[in-house]
Amino acid sequence: MTVHIGAKPGEIAETVLMPGDPYRAKWAAETFLDNAKLVNEVRGMFGFTGTWNGHPVTIQGSGMGMPSLSIYANELLKDFGAKTLIRIGSCGGMQAKVKIRDVIIAMTATSVSTPSLEIFREVNFAPSADWSLLSAAVEAAKTKNVATHVGGIYSSDVFYDERPDLTEQMTRHGILGVEMEAAELYILAARYGARALAVLTVSDHLQTGEALPSEDREQSFGDMVDIALHAAFPS
Image 1 (spheres, rainbow, N blue to C red):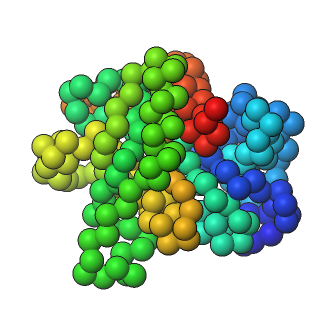
Image 2 (image 1 turned 60 degrees about the vertical axis):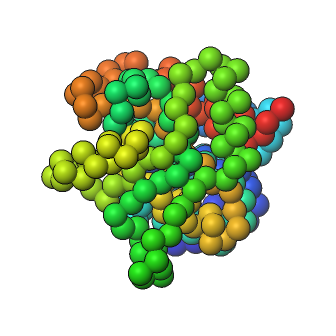
Image 3 (image 1 turned 90 degrees about the horizontal axis):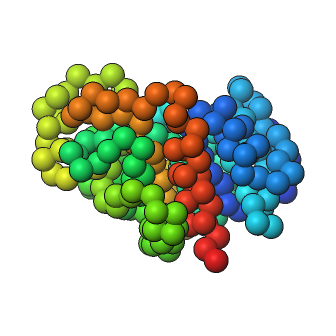
């Protein structure tokens, strides 16, 4: 048990999927895991552990933004022995070729700042995904015939951004989508010698203004979770 995770020793699997929304964690656990058990509900941030194809898996909500994710990722890695963390979440598309419902597999994550900024000071550390997870996720997406894009994303500090100039430059430099957590996740995985990946569903688009209706999200998010699980446990 830690300050933010009330699980007992042995209740957290080495492989953890991390949606931002705790209720998405609940949905994913009930949909994809066998014998899912609630192992954390501190501050309403649900975590469940069960099995997928016989493999132990935990699905733990991370909250919104890098500071919140940093709390849970640190505790999972330091105190519970997690070895693989995969973010499953939504993002905003930034390129014309990226469509609503497409999946983005994040090779790198650009940011203005992260909770780890004070450690690096003048160094512009380049956080990136684990190659074994990334390549397995790409293969899983091909098998499922899901429209997928692989490349860089932008992890923003804020949801209501008032920097159109920054968005323009990110788009100009090929950034596929924007979300709020992956950069810090990749940094922490590097620090602790763990594996990390972000698999994201495009739920809205910064260029077109399109947004995925809430009633259509479940199936699209299901593809993302399935890809993440196959990435963690390739056949």
